[in-house]
Length: 136
Image (cartoon, rainbow, N blue to C red):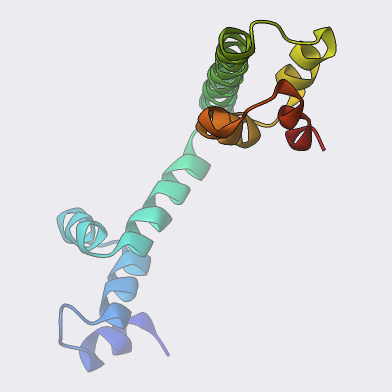
């Protein structure tokens, strides 16, 4: 069906098909922006087209920036996990006076979720050897 015929057949402005027809025709920028506000899929389509229409250098800079932001987030999350592990080692040392040497290494390698579980359970631990169950 031709877009012109679809436009004539559909008179309701909030109709999803009408919105997509207007997007494809791209006759009225203000109307399209209004549709983008009301319809997340249209907004996403506009963003993707804008991205694809950028020149190669701009697109490359955008991708480099996106990667740098993801790397920064990854570094921050890694530092947070390391800090939690170090704090858990301090808490266990305070509670049990001394930790076996290999515990430090094992705790540093644990997933963040496990570290949080041990930290939550620390008041229920009566012996340092009970921590070993979390190493498995």
